[in-house]
Length: 244
Image (cartoon, rainbow, N blue to C red; front, side, top):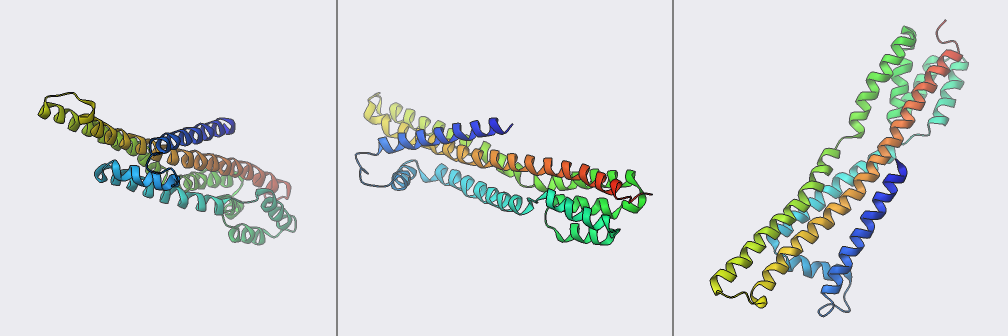
């Protein structure tokens, strides 16, 4: 799974670099000494503000959701081994309330699941396992919060680009019909504008896809830790004689 994610990220990075190189090569005559950002700015303006603005909105909103998820998931990452050891020490001393306090004071979904398990400890192992499974589903939903919006922007950005391309091509053919000539100089401008919307839509989708894959891999890692910690908690509680 991780190898697949790494390959996907590399492919997306190479694709993005290739697209940016094409934009830079197309603007060599007007921006030889300019930065890539200046080239992107010029091409963005040339592509027409109507659809380019919508694509830019997709990028801004998508990045906002991505940054929020990344920050939240980094905060949610917990050293489960250290947490299990601290709970084990409390339970070894017969201090169930102390173990619950350790879990309650530790941030992250793993600690929250452990707290729910410890809270149901007096009701027996079946109650503990049921509480862990039920609360684990709730935490999974919280971890995946916002992913649907990122997926939406990944899908919409290239679609808007393609729509801009189709409308631009229609405009180019309208010029051919009005002039009655298929001279390249007549339609070149319209076709150029049309293709620029597609390029920028694809670039936005590629950027957001990279962040999306990273977030999904981060969630998978947290979920694996949650499952391991849940199993470890039950073993620790059984070993320390919580149920007699």
